Image (cartoon, rainbow, N blue to C red; front, side):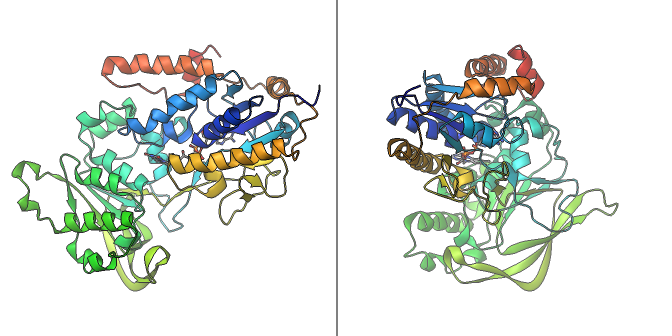
Length: 459
Ligand code: FAD
């Protein structure tokens, strides 16, 4: 082929990072072809499997991703796990550039005794369960207790608290799975504590999510006014989002429940507990499951985001039957050919260029760590795409020789018995889900079984 050969780029992962990277490259390079590989048959990563079911507006980004996937120069290949079915080296041979956007497939662990007891779950698994992630469908959380403890003060922790306490009729209209809805219908959980090691000035959730929780019908916030003493002054000069968030917590803490009209006084409640660091998940007498968590009380050293929680020596036991650890997701190394910073849990890179490996790029959570909303992921994916475009145009990537792209991968995959799922296959699964949801008044009923997904498309 000639020097005019179309640059072939592949993206690993079909979450926001994968799709936004593809979108930017396609938009700014009229000749580029982009293939998106995804390990699951179905696309969109955490937009489908992370974002809470009662936040449908957040999922509208799927419309943009769908437009990208339908572009004549983009192809989606689901059901292909890079690092297992195909190596990164094989992708590098078939493409001029390879972008790794495979997110964060694991979670941070607490590293305390009792963490593996029955009744203790990672937020990742719990969220995956109610959102239909196939690998979490057997989680079967025991919701027969009255008190749940969520370790963490981020938006994911608030999502879980909200799902646990939401009136069922609100959830019924969402795309939450039927299985989790049935479990929540029998739930006895009526109290949720969100526990953090540090103080109110260090919470990581945002005001919109907090306000939603405060206004949740049928659930009463319980905040201890003493936790907020003097904070009004402390945030006077803080950045506006932190100031407003703190003011909302203070206002809620000081509001006396009896000042609320009687009908809003509800049997369900939730609250924030601060400066408590989990030391041990305590077992029931027969050792079969969790009955509580022993906490070390802490004091803060330093201020603002960098404040450190130092144990004071005092302990406290919090009784609960369900523990959800929401202390963060974690990326994993994909393939020995790809450098990985195990300390920071990211692929070392500069502006998305993987250090020491020309032609290899990364975007999204695996590039900058598992924090930030979809917009943040979009911006950093555009930044990576820009690096790819510069390298294509600046001659760093040798496009004088053509690459076979998916043509090469197709035969490799066939020889290994892997059958990729195309975007139009996904659209069949999508249509089946929407049809199933319709009868129940839901936007969709997610198919949670991989084999069933494949059956629908005749694999
Ligand atoms: P992901 O979305 O995780 O996508 C990675 C994709 O790569 C996945 O589809 C995965 O299956 C695939 N993959 C993994 N390994 C392989 C492999 N080996 N081969 C091929 N494919 C692979 N942001 C908001 O703006 N609003 C919200 O309401 C919101 N709610 C959230 C709720 C939760 C519980 C979580 C965890 C996050 C939420 N976020 C929200 C943040 C948002 O989801 C992330 O910013 C974004 O999804 C990160 O994008 P990503 O593409 O890097 O990762």
